[in-house]
Amino acid sequence: METSNTKLRVAHIITLLELGGAQRNTLYTVGHLNPQRFQPMLICGKGGILDKETEGAVWPTYFVRPLVRPVIPFMDIPALIILYRHLRRLKPHIVHTHSSKAGILGRIAAYLAGVPVIVHTFHGFGFTPAQLALTRKLYVTVEKFCARLSTHLIFVSEANRSEAAQLGIGARIPNSLIRSGIELSPASAPTWSAYRGPDRRHKPNVALRQEFGIPETAWLVTYVGNFKPQKNPMDLARTAAEVLKRTSDVHFLLVGDGKLKADVENWCKVQAISGSMHFANWRRREDVARIFGDSDCFLLTSLWEGLPRALVEAFAAGCPAVAYAVDGVQDILKNGENGFLVPPRDVAFAAEKILWLKDHPQDARRMGEKGRQTIEKDFDIERMVRQQEELYEKLYEAVPLKDYYNARWMIEGTTHA
Image 1 (tube, rainbow, N blue to C red):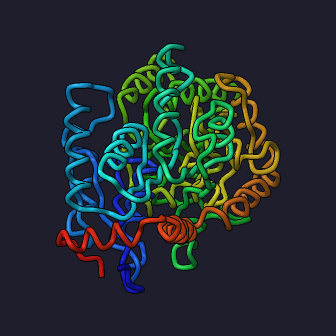
Image 2 (tube, rainbow, N blue to C red; image 1 turned 30 degrees about the vertical axis):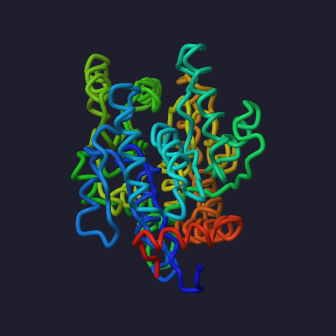
């Protein structure tokens, strides 16, 4: 029988530990679940840039090499088999999947392995507006099927929850809204606002600007994220070109990497705007905080999003935003309050709003402060972890045969105390 000091074994499954909000939040959750109540473990594909963060971790990590992002049947089937074998051996009370591929294969493997509680977080959807209608329909059908295997579904944005309801994904499955958080505790919050305040424009971060070759007096627009089709990075450059037609004292800092980065850089050279465009590779969280703290505007041209972590981080630093009005962006960016929403692909309108912020510094500061207030309560990563802990315990407590599962696993040699 289950005892009061039994720790719940929670297996988090994610496709790859790439640089992204879903990956960072999953790693944070695994590392910060209450050790008195939970035994976390991580299962993921091999080769992500964040793999190194699992080295020396207090939780075990199991790499599944065939678990990759693209749909490749001759790798997906072995990945499913390996996931199933891991779960049969590890015998978790709860499996929590993240990302589309891991969400599909992980939930099927968990169901076949008899895991009592199966949770999935939608950090966005695997189907996108860029896909062919038939491909999109197939993905929606698969998500509907996997939702039926789930005990509970988590959404990070109301926009995604609404879209799932409209498509009939998880129609009869309980769900929750749990925001993807960032570190906003008193110990870390000052980092985000270190260079932000009413007089910041008179005290730019000289060292940071020298590092990137940005003039101290320049008005700075920043982007942080992947250079991939979803993020639509070419529109960042097109927007910059529109702005630079009107003024020369605005500079753009684009932080990140991806397969489209070289194309963006080359386009800027052809358009003769490279002098105002500054590119940087991925930076540590502390550096991102400094960059946002010294920026005057955050620009996001994604064509679809779950809930962009970079937007939350920009708001944490008091930086107003101009972003395309898509999906989860609209959950927290309120037009005219903490920034401006722009119709997707309307680079001229995006440029107009950037210039408006530049020409109205007091309003821009007010919007930046409003952005900070927007995320102060719901986007603290510690709150996110506590919400998940409460959900895990509630779901497992409701399992009719939990005593049977616990007794069987202890008989088979796996203890949970």
